[in-house]
Each structure stands twice: as structure tokens, then as C-alpha cells.
Amino acid sequence: MRWYLTGVVVSGFGTTAMWLVSGIWVKSLTGSDSLAALAAFALWAPALLGPLLGTVADRFRRRPLLVGLDLAMAGLLPVLLWVTSADRVWLLFAVLVLYGAQGTVHDAAEQALLSAEVDRERLGAVNGWRMTAGESTKLIAPLAAAGLFARYGGEPVVLLDAASFVLAAGAFAAMRVREEPPAAAPAGRGARWRETAEGVRLLAASPGLGRLVATGSFTMLLAGVNGAAVYAVVDGVLGRAPAYAGVLYAVQGAGSVAAGLLAGPLLRRLPERRLALAGLVLFSVAAGARALPSGAVALAASAVLGLGLPWVLVAVATAVQRAAPAGAAGRLAATANTLLFVPNALALALGAALVTALDPRVLLPVLAVAGLAGAAVADRRPRAPRPPRTPRPPRSWCVAGR
Image (cartoon, rainbow, N blue to C red):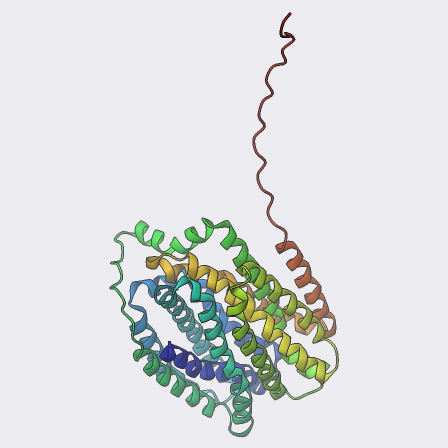
């Protein structure tokens, strides 16, 4: 577990830095808020292929797969050193799409590995540690990345991210796990299609898990619009330079660290559904507060955003891992991630258009009202089916003794 969390921290540092700088990079080269938001969309878009990419996570042993994926990204990232003008921005978007595909397989393999190696009762705590480890990088990575970019441009961040992947590969290679060889791939087109769709079937067979994933999907839909508006908030509401987004993300990372530490103890006392609803309510309130033209409120809202959103993700991941069969854990995790993150990707694209048409001081309060309404709907328990009526016995007019 120590080596695993080390790998999460190291790779998370580089990924957070690259994710932030990609938007700032596009904004600085093109001057477009919409294209800057589409950089995040490019990262999320491969989640559309989650069920298919999750099959890859079930076809290989998970530890070697994690190592290979990280080394492949380390070799690909230096291509971005050629992005020096607006006419080469397409190259950045192409690498970001491959980055997202790698992350989809990587996350599915991680979740499958945890579901196989960690006791069911400890999964909530371990997912909380995982969230804390990953989100703790937001305390430093956004500030470091924004500072490096402001001083030297995108090239040092690219090399930093590539080095983080190499270090993460070494940490994952050092993990001590005993993995059984995966089952052979089924023969025939129909059998392979059924294998890819296995995650969908497993999710549909569990109504409670399906409702929880739907709550997470709705939350991530709102999060996508909120994320697309970040540069408009920095620019139009706070009157700051684009690099100030790094400060907001750092504060959000602090909230996420606290969320991860609290998630394990809370999941020992609450069902996953309750934790997810609490996270959705916190997220909605904080998103609406970002419309206020106050630096202090913006920082506080970022911290609450960091607290609420991870609770939703930890709750869904824990429920999925507890329900996953050993041979299909990667497909179920990837399918759930598709349903979680595809709405986020679509909302990032939609948000890129909305921020050009709506003032964020109007858009974000509407977003908050929608989130609170969605939480109220998700909190309603489904009606239990009515028991069948028992037919009344025929009335007898006979009186005993007569």
C-alpha cells in the first residue's frame, strides 16, 4: 500500500500540473476561453470508451499494466515540446486525448487491483487515502505549474510530468501483490461483445448501485459546467489574471485532502448513498457562491468544492469495488467511470459555449439550484412494490346453531 500510494502521489502531481497548464497554455496561445475549456474536454473525452478500455484492464495482470501505461506516457509527452504557436495547438489536443485514454485504463486497473487486494470493510478507508494522496498534489502542483509556466512556458511542465510518470512506474513495479493470470479472451465476435458489455450488465443488475452511479453522473455533469466557467470567474468576476486559477485549484486541493481523510470514518457510519448526497449538496452551495465578486468567498468556495466532490467519487468507487466480481472488476469500474465522467466531458464542452453566452454571475446560481434540486430527488427512496391483494373469503349467511 505504501508503494501504491507513492505512485498515486507522484503521478498525481504531474497530472495535476499538466491538466492545469494545458488550459492556461491554450488560453495564452489563442486568447480563447472556450478553447481553454476544451483542453479539459479532450482529457475527459476518452471516458466515452470506458467499457471497451476497461476490458483491457481485465485482460492483463494489473501491476505490469500500470507500469507499462506510465512508461508509455513518459515517452509520449515530450512531443508537446513542439507546441510553440497557435497553429500547433492541435498537437496539444491530440496528446491530451491519448492522455485521457491512458488515464481511463489506468484508473480501471487501479480500482480492480484494490478490489482484489483490499478487504471489503477497508475499501472505504483505502479509497479515502487514495483520494487524499491524489488530491494532496493540488496543494503544490497548481502553484508550481502556474509559476513554471509564467516564467518559462509549458516545456518545463511537460518534462516534469514525463518524469513523474517514470517515478510512478517504479513505485508500482515495487508493489508486492500476488495476481492470478487473467482468463483467456473469449473467441468469436458475439462473445467479445458480451465481454465488453459485462460491466453494463452488472450495473443494470444492481438497482441500488445504478441509482448511486446516476447521482454521481449528475454531480459530474454540474462539475463540468462549473469547471468550464473557472477562467470566466477569474477574469470576469474576480478581475484576476488567468494564472490565478492555480491558486483556486490549490485551495480546492486542500479541501479534497480533508475529504479523503474524512471519507473512511464516514463510510463506516453512513451508507455510500448518504455520503454521495452530502457531497452533492456541498458542491452545489459552493458553486453558487463563486458568483460573488469576493476573493475570500472564492477561496472558501474552492475549499468546499474540494470537500464535496470527492465524497461523491469515493462513495461511488467504494460501492462499485464492493460489488465487482474478480474477473470483471476492471470492466465494471470503467463502465461506472464512463457514466460518471462522460457527462463531465459533455458539460465541459457545453460550458465552453455557455461561458460565452451567459455571465458566470447568472450561470453559477442556476447551477447551484439545479444541484440542490437533484439532491432532493435522489434522496427520495423508490416506492416499494405493493403486495398483491388477498381475495376476501365469500361471506357466509349461515349462523352457528341455526
